[in-house]
Length: 195
Image (cartoon, rainbow, N blue to C red; front, top):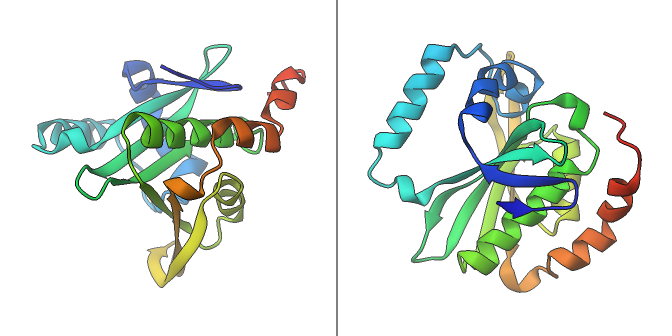
């Protein structure tokens, strides 16, 4: 378990998988580029295929668990490359009531610290939709820099959208403790829960 200020990143067990279809078929799916509904059978098949992959060790997934025990989403390191020492970050908060409350930033700081300090990676990268301004602000606050754009990359809801690419180098990151303070996460944790 990775302990944060507002939440913890814990093993991605059945209690999170049970919420996946609901989350992906809700507002989170739009931000993941999904433009169709996901069935439980499709989701089960996806997990079975993922587990059978010979390189499944290049993928680590955590559940996001609030301090009161509510599962709200997932964070993952994907395409972990031990030779080049880099990985892609994937994330999603499936419970919209927790959007904008600092939970995503807290989880991002935890996954970055895990990647740099535990896995000894030197670079992280991620992509987000060009119109997902909230996610862009969040990753930039956590230290990621915009590296480029794939213009009109994703076709969703009858519109082509840009995909923005972000990266973070280990030697650019000031550390989790500094960013927890800068982002005021401890102050947020002291506030009465608005959810």
